[in-house]
Image (cartoon, rainbow, N blue to C red):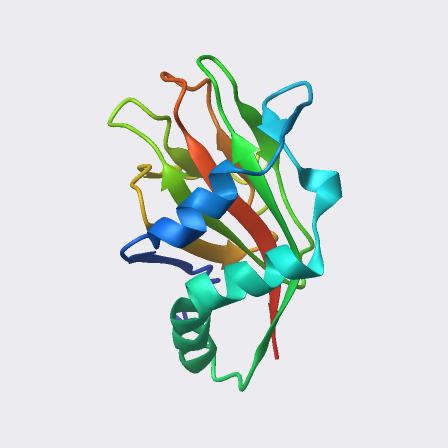
Length: 165
């Protein structure tokens, strides 16, 4: 009997967070939407360039693993979670990858929870990745994910979409 499987990879890399980058992120004005504070509609070329400098080595490493030659940052934003803030289950563009980079958090910050593509119709055990300052998570945009209600007022991330070509 032949067995076939689908594979969806989540890359996790921990790095030292640049103080200069963190200071810049903390200076960005965020607006409250229904679930958390963010600047989703305020992405800029300058911000993308700074994110690229901060995460270039990680993006290049993923390029190599995917046998791609380059990447392009498509959209970046900041999210800040106060106590009890959350981000409901969602996906990004299924043809691209997405990333989460932790700028600040505590041991009480909620993890990011990932589900099998096809969730909730396709069921399997979720993957919980704990918040850790300097941690970067890169995953296919088709992977459903969420942040359950947060347990501190510190959790802050830079998120975005990236295309590997």
